Image (tube, rainbow, N blue to C red; front, side):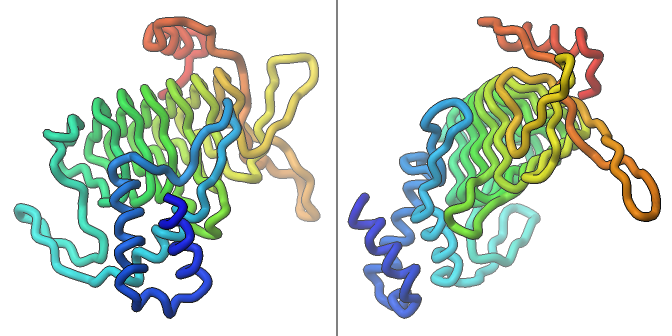
Length: 272
């Protein structure tokens, strides 16, 4: 692995090395290892804290210039791109509902379910996770186990700069319909986001459960229950409501995550 890393780092600094077959083979090997889940763009060190393997992201970025455009015919569909699609789903042990698409170089763990959806290169999707209809998992996003990405959820891709943290959704989270999570935001374990929540690197995330508001940015604390909100800000032209996210409670710990989730949705009357 260290030899691969050295080759990738050298090619990143000197693009002329992309003409060398050894370099090209090393890049392809890294993408194959990502596809098999043997290496990841980011790895969790503890809850909410992730280490980014920037050299792996560099390999993904270098994979594009060494790949040729080609026509791909799949049943009645035709594509024209540099990156092939994942295949062999039965052997992998993943249920894939037409026309779900996952790009080669993404990893889908056995037991995951892809409804008609899209998973981009570098992404990781854990076992037991449902990527629901028209949900998208962007480049390098890391989705944990037993996560539900509801219909139309947009998980943003983060490829550049290589050291930038990708979007992280940790284990046992529920992400409601049409939520958008981008710019390297972290959703910690067992959090529940109601429909339409938007989380960016600059979104104010406000815990309103105590006597005084507590603000976060870029992360949703573990087991938080979150809904869309607005906050008033003064401008020269007047006062206007800006979008924010409100933490309105905590999901109770339970060994039965599905039962716990249903209780949360009822208790807080959340749209999903």
